[in-house]
Image (cartoon, rainbow, N blue to C red):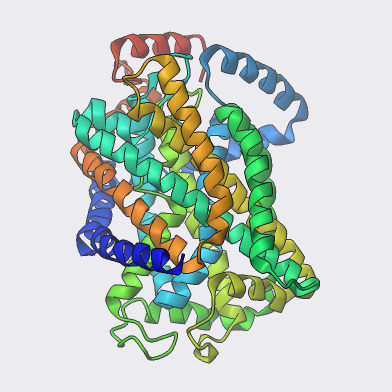
Length: 512
């Protein structure tokens, strides 16, 4: 087993060095900059509107119980008719795919392996990622199609195939998505098993941690399988219930921990900014990293966390019942902001204010340090809370990525009959669930590195297409806001005339 893992690591290191080399990093930043310019820096100029049309009315709706019940009935009816999910359920599924172990363990891993300066590069990637994710959602909804069941399906492979019209690149993107979905599932399960087994070992002690992790993997696979079989509707409902709870719990605990070390906050920010452009040679302790390492770790973990540029979360957004691409696109702006500027920042500040990095040896394991962060601040209670938060984060990510992989599989085998395509999707689901169990046996560092590679491979074709279709994103955006101002222009709701007319008619009837 060790020799096989050694070979896998060498091959992965070679590919990872290419896909996360300077060309791809520059491509990520350049794509975000281009889209920012073409949309007139929408992540800034329309940020308030993104809040007022997405999360604000959702929260108000939750506070109105009667309204929620009536809206729920109305939405359920529409979902049966269109095979879609509500805007919030689409968002919850997408955010559950992004808010995962990458926001806690991944951020700590970035700081341990790239220094605190990596946090600034996460922020930079997220600033441009807000408009990148917005653009993915706009194109995803504009080029989505209805499958044989009447469900709306979309994703990067759809706008590459029907927008850019490079079908070979679309198939490559779909295959990379399949690999990334399995890899992402492995990362999340690995961290769940490591966290839960670690917490149990601290309290009662075990002689065979490997067996405990394997049993945990079996439990995760069984529960996930029940939900995954239900498709996007069941995934969306579970995500919409868990995401608000787990996010609020983490935010409250982090703020309390930061307040406990409030005097260390200035020095934490000082480290983030002073070490972001460091030219120190590696080997000088935790704070000694090359400039390239800081950027690569920050960008890789940033993209891993918020997924802007991957073309993954757009798959969930494309199942939304909304007919307006821009309207769902604005959810993407908030999604990246919430994921990185709130959750990842809280993790970073909690970690940097709790520990003295100069006292660390550099050999610390990310999962163990994440548990220690909560234990240092809250004792046994902190370990218990963390053992709830991280598994929930990770579990909802597993659910979301199962749907991403399912849609990628559906696209790859799109030319088969309905039965053949369904069989292929079922085979993928079996592989995905079995992979959940066996990913508990892989070492922590390797599984992060493998999925970093898959993410990089998935990002390249998507970014190429975003650059090529940036003009279209700008036109769709202008079309939406012109109509909001009262201008009489033809709505740009779908790339296909028949769907565009259908969506126009539903808008006229007051449906989203």
